[in-house]
Length: 512
Ligand code: GAP
Image (cartoon, rainbow, N blue to C red; front, top):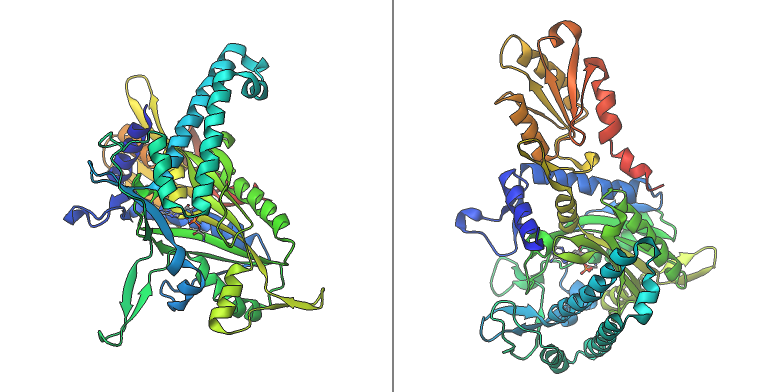
């Protein structure tokens, strides 16, 4: 199935089953803003819980906060966002569509990479296990030609970005024959810078109101609270502060469903370290974060690192964890070594000392920071897109969401075989008991087969069926979503069976 078709199916499925709706759909929606429905918010909460527990509960030296979205406007002057949180935009004069110039170039480069991948795939097919990828890269003339083009493009692109040379960005687009996907032409405008922050006014009167911003990242709420947390929590370096919250960006290219939104959520952790030890921590966090993603079980080959060629002015190392989304490998998480830039800037702009006295070194310094920053919505999209399966059964197609059981919105469906003979009452009793531990759903409508399909489609790991025999033998049938196997078990054993599969600990234990 083509990537576009898969994404379309996922969007339709997410809407049909109450995971995600376009925002204010009643008024035809709002560009790149989405609402999470009754099942979507459950899945989202479970992802948050997985992240929060992995960070805060499993690390003695990481604590969590919840800072406000509104911050003093000087925060954004100090952080550099007022002056430099820009994207280079370009318009196609024929289609009137607007693009990010850097994204157009990156996508073009990815297409070139895919040509190499295709060539390698041919080799793998032809030679099987004896295929030597390194040798193919070093000797195959088609690959070498393509790689040389990629290297040349990359060098030119990085130079242009580093020098903020907007004319050169435009020239790269033209020289590489990059055309607008809508009009198919290269009738491009100049490239201009566009600040991504949303502004609003704080204050009751027009004269007294001041301009403030909706935060474009949650990280600054952590930096401005560094001293508060370090002192009140008696934190010793190295230590981390974690936070989950909304961020807002007036994205130029807001496409691809919840991948790039104007209102989204981040899960960020700033880890404060001794200057000079930041690279050691950068590598540790790079590895730890990849492990967190891989524990979800979607297959290791769906993740890869992408080291940044162009570093932000405050960073001395940066890497993305990319995920194989339906539209290809794209950034899921960023790990950044931000030096002492943010704390030093806040120290300078606030005039207040932000240092740490290190008793082991007997000296004070501004701590360095290694940041891990993952998009909650992108993680949601990663989970949803890799969980979605269409399976051909004997005479029907089963749509099943193989969501990792610990993240599934509903853990158990409780289904009386018929709506009479006292079965609903027993089912309700079972549901009442299980509800203390698990999110359950009761369903007595339609045939049992239809009810199973409904639960498969929303990713419920277990269905429990109560039948006439239950009244005498105190046993029920438990059905597994993935294997569709059914087993007769005693009611008294249900909680244990379910817990052994859906417990969040199953995920967390893989991280130790
Ligand atoms: N504090 C660092 C920071 O904000 P970033 O790379 O700009 O770094 C971090 O963002 C993560 O936030 C990204 O890897 C992505 O998962 C998520 N993210 C960024 N912009 C987003 C958007 N417009 N929509 C959804 N998620 C976004």
